[in-house]
Length: 108
Image 1: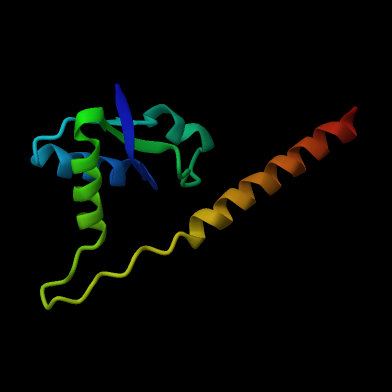
Image 2 (image 1 turned 60 degrees about the vertical axis):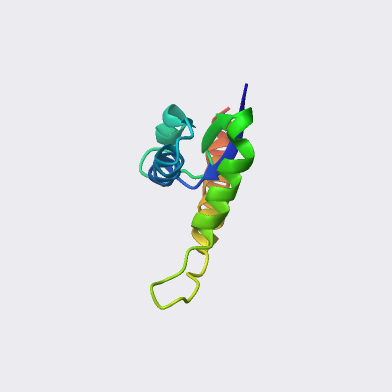
């Protein structure tokens, strides 16, 4: 059985994490490849994840936490990425869906 060890913003990030885990001997599977392109050119986010075997889950989470808390060469912590763009993209898609549904309903 496999567990989701990481929810990635996109496929590139998911494969970076999977490569990190693989370099430490943890077999990882990236899921969500076919869901990514369903929204065309808009950067669909939140559909990809990295899965690992149950036995490797805790070690994978430790490595991912270490990766997320990475520091620069002079010891300063790298700040987390701001996902505000993802938030607004999802609301934009919801708005566009509502407009499309409204348009279709006015045609009836």
